[in-house]
Amino acid sequence: MSDAHHDHPAHVAHHFESAEQQSDSDKLGMWLFLATEVLLFSGLFCAYAVYRSLNPEIFYYAHYLLDWRLGALNTLILLFSSLTMAWAVRTAALGNMRATAMLLAITFLCAVGFLVVKAVEYSEKFEKSDVWGVDYYIGDKKGDEVDEAPRDFVLDDEVLAAIAQVQEDGLEGYTQEELEEMRDRLADLMPAPDLEAELPGASATSLIRPPEGQRQARPDMLEETVEFQMTFEMPDHVREAPPQNVHIFFGIYYSMTGLHAIHVIIGMIVLALLFVLTLLGKFGSHYYSPIDVGGLYWHLVDLIWIFLFPLLYLVD
Amino acid sequence: MVDYKPQDDLHDPGQGHVDEHHAHATPLWILWAVFLALVFLTFLTVFFAHPFVKEQARIFVSENFYPMSAADASRFAFYLAMLFATTKGVLVVLFFMHLVWDRPFNAVVFLGTLFFVALFVGYTLADATQYRQHETATRTQMEPRYSAQQLRDAIQERLDELAEEEEEDDEEPEDAPDEPGEPEDAPDEPGEGEPEESPNDVEDAEREPDDDVEEEGDE
Image 1 (cartoon, rainbow over the protein chains, first blue to last red):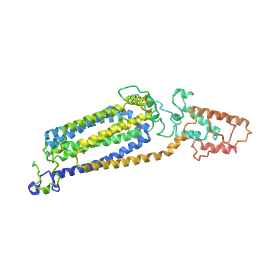
Image 2 (tube, chains in turn blue, red):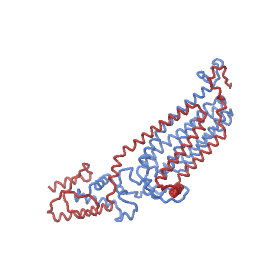
Image 3 (tube, each protein chain N blue to C red):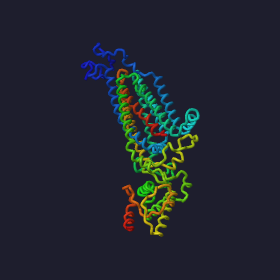
Image 4 (cartoon, rainbow over the protein chains, first blue to last red):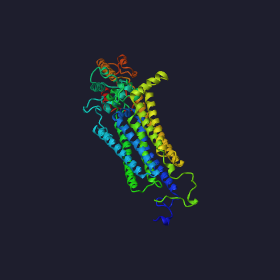
């Protein structure tokens, strides 16, 4: 293909009227692709919204298990990489390709930094078994000691159903044997006769708990006295009464941050390609659509993280 | 590299007012201003999410404007965080992604996407609570009538009652089931031996086998 034959410069495909029309088409195509990306993530955001609206206590509890400082660090890294990316597009438009290559490299390094922080976070959580599904470890979340302290009174479904029935019907319908059995099983559940004194706040709502996921006091029921501290420490009353099904949070956490991390990796590939092509002199002020469009993709990655950070790390 | 220039007017699709290439170079001060604004908003997001700050703000609002519960404060903090995040997103989209200088149709594409996301999340959220009705009803029913301690006492009292009845052993079982009320009411009630069939067909597994044995034995 020669310029002389087609009567247009090499960087303009011959089905475009002009370089500008080509550049506009590039951008429109990228925006359409970004639309599909937003819709892809919106599925996960939707899952987040539904599960959080149904189980606010899980999200309130679990966000203490994340380190907001790492999340904030990653936010700053991505914001800075967005700056350098936008800057690279600017220098490309101005034709300063040496600066563009430099800025693309910085953006790439920011992406590496982001993934390093993410890896630290993930490995910490895997160590503590803060994972999705049945492997989630419900033990002590504060320290390293792994003692199976009784978190709460564990009622099997059978006893639970029986007690619910009693609450409903009263005791009159039961025979002596049934009552004796219920008494014995209740006695098993209660470590000391003076239970209420021993566990302040323990009441029938905590002992005779409704089915999964709705047992604990909602965040709005928690009255806490707040003292200043630098980090967001988990309050004692929250640690002592972890909600059930915290793994739901981690399922959502890993899905969202994982999909986002995949996008970061794809972005890194794009950045590396752009870097090499820039060094090879493929772009100039007359033609830099790939950098422009790659920048749009990178900014979307940043945009997603801007929402992920407060939603996952700063639940309140 | 050859700078392309339209060779005649036919090749220029009538947008001559756009200074083709250099017009798109975003001024550097805008990039830095946007970046600093983004960092500042991130700081504000973290700041207002801090429990201490939240509590102080809650107290301040409660004393000066209107009483604000901790739940209100949490909700408010969430909206605030989302407001900051949205502002950051708008800054990124408008300036880093050049949408403010771009062809408006790109903005239409993006806003259209957001519209459909809103439909998707909004309708799903509105629907999500519908499936909760059964469980919510269960929870309302299970508002504690007895604490565990009271329940055990009540069971004990009821057992004593049954033991007395067995000693007498000549009373006809009364038909009227008494009001299943407070546990302290239980000893006042007249004795009642026959287990009344629960109106609820759902028998728990623990109770069912004993029921049959008891009925056969008494008749």
